[in-house]
Length: 606
Image (cartoon, rainbow, N blue to C red; front, side, top):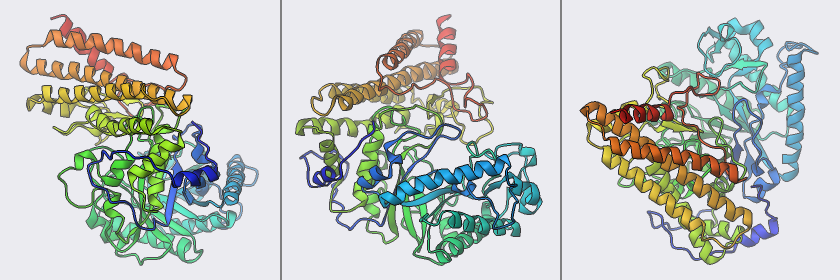
């Protein structure tokens, strides 16, 4: 849904509130500070796909929401010719140069719109990526030969991994920064990505992260940060947001974070950007312990269209828990949410990913649930003494809800957090968090499936075996039944809404039904897989339970497809296959459905 808010009406809403019982787990006192200086948003496009259509691409809308900066994924680092490094290194008239110049022209137009709206722009930038012509000429001086580079694109046999210790990489990096700000002088700064590099949308460029891990990695980061600090912060007085994101080192380990950042002199233009979770945006992961420590300014990243939890296809209200702590944090000590961090002098901003992250679908046409998360976090970041409850009520007024319907809407939102937790995870035992992600639902798979990755995307093999061995099959399945009961309650509440426009009410109903069917499918699939494994161990199968679950499973998939066919606002559907990025379509036939049918057939013949 493309939500437009007139500024006058928006200011009126700030003064409005609706009485509503707070259902959180803390007695929130309110955000009485003056807010944070950086309130940023990003629409993250799926690699290799058309850019996401979103209200959050409009700088006027983003400004009206209270943001003061955008982090666009324009590949601005791929929009410079390196003529300032060596004239004509990207040949005049070549297809490569034409692509670069066209990209630069597109960015010119988008920057004009942002400048007209008074919106700061901090471009999302991959380090280090350069044109193929540059690699062809100076590749041997840029880094070591690599043969297995994830995300580099092109002929990996001829790719070299950039190495910040190579003098040529430093020279080219300084030239790139000079080229970016020389070509786009109104640009306000850069956001640096080095943990992952995806080149699906940049056909004439190659590269990747120029740093390693371990003791040498600490030195690498210090060198890289200091180069960027000098070129961006000191020489040009621009902002530099240095993301610590990697796969469990700089991003999550306080000792590593301090070992790197303590060697860098603070600067008012240098800010470190860190996800709020200790790892990726996943439930059951604790609050990131690197937040609030050290001597540098920090900004917190929060995903509003959660790639592991529905991507906005169904309710998933996480903003309250990002502020106050998730349910699963109960009993933990220390900083559990942003309200615990707000008095820390290091906290200088909140960066929402209003849309995007991950791969493929589900694809949505209504941004309601993503927008709700982004709205609450962006308003909280402004300060103004508003509690999460008060901000949520502002959002309800924004959509024209009566007092009674605002209460119903909040109940749906708050229930969704627990419904997602129990539906995809467990409070009783560890579940591989990557078994379900984007539009893919995995399960028991062939042992070799995704053997190339430590995350074991799409698999539940190890965890399901442990559930059986620990005698937790029935308790874990009871959690899934509880999740379904929650989603059914949400579906009933959605049908009771009478105010707000037709589009709003329709999407709340459709998205609640979507979530209920999805988690009911999971309940039946887990019943079949866990009962099947249990039978494998005991050589005695619960034939009745498996057959009953399989009948429901089949009917639910039929209902799921009918929901999509009969409702224009319904998101695209999940697929019963485990995620595997070694396939073009990101899956094979391994996953939920194959495992379910295997046991249904095997046990049915008993």
